[in-house]
Length: 166
Image (cartoon, rainbow, N blue to C red; front, side, top):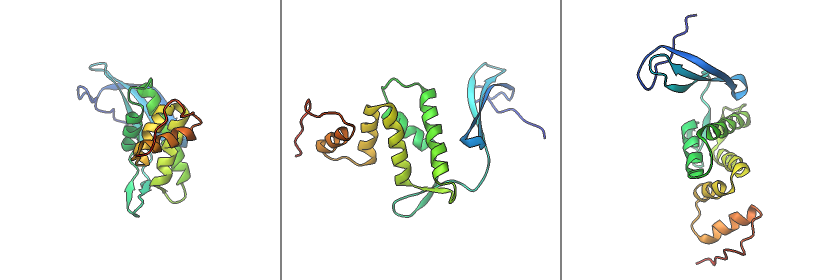
């Protein structure tokens, strides 16, 4: 089998070298850090097994393919202006993807609510502010009281910020 290098997203060159390889998703994917021989740009490529697509079942019953980028954008938004590197965010997304695939291994699908809860739980372990941000969008908060109740679930006292529902 002849392996071809990956096109550099910066300059389009096909000559690169692999700097680091890491197995992900219980051996079902490989993440490779690469460096372009032409311009020195570093980038990441993924090799995944092509299988029956992993699907997300929406609340109305529709199915759509699992979108790693959508999960990543949601986490980036929740962690915006928080002290987290892009590598740490990528690691969180990898963990969520791995857990989601384990949860839906038998049927190749996961309910969107289970996926959202998984993201919320994962974010909650690393940053409480990001947790509340994500929860406010995911659970469609409409009043300040909903924020207070979510903060109280985290075990944080709301005495310093009493809010009355309007």
